[in-house]
Length: 177
Image 1 (cartoon, rainbow, N blue to C red):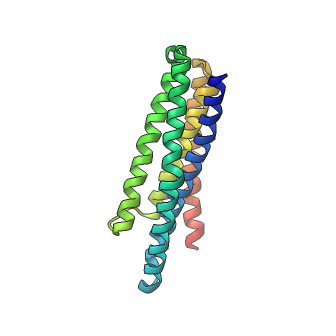
Image 2 (tube, helix red, strand yellow; image 1 turned 90 degrees about the vertical axis):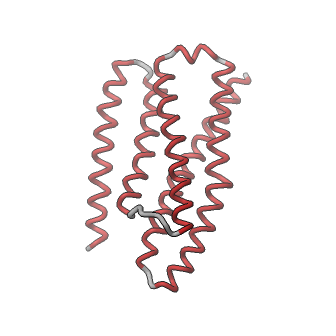
Image 3 (tube, helix red, strand yellow; image 1 turned 45 degrees about the vertical axis):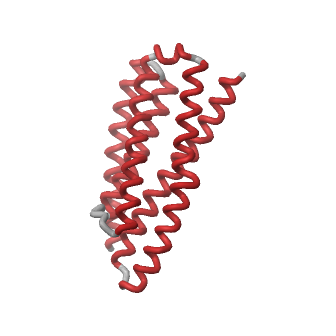
C-alpha cells in the first residue's frame, strides 16, 4: 500500500514539475522578447519577469522536482526488483537528462536576471520542446516496456521532435508577418 501512495505522489509531482518547466521556459521567451521594447518599458517588464520566474522556480518547480525524485526513489526502495528491468534503466537515463535540463533552466534564469543571457527566443522555443521530447520518452519507456515497442517509440519520438522543430520555425515565420 505504501508503494501506491509513493506512486501517486510521484505522478502528482512529476506533473507539477513538468508544468513548471514548460511555463518557466515560456516566461524566458517573453523575458527575452521584452528586450525589444523601449528601455523604460523593458525595465518594468524585466523586474516583473524576475519576480514571476523566481516564485515559479523556488515555490513550484524546484520543490516538485525534489519531491518527484524522492517519491521515485521511495518506489525503488520499496520495489527494488524494478532496477532489474531494462525499461527502468532507460527511464532513469531520461530522468537524469530532465534533471540536467532543470538546472540548465536555472542557469538561464540567473543569466536573464543579470541581463547576460545570450539565448534567443527561437533557441528558447526549441529548448522548450526538448522537455516535451524527454517527457514523451519517459512515458513511452514506462508504458511500453518492451524492446520491440521501444523501436516504434524511438521512431515516433524522432518524428515528434522533427514535427515540433518544424512547427516552431513555422510559428516564427507567422509571428514575423
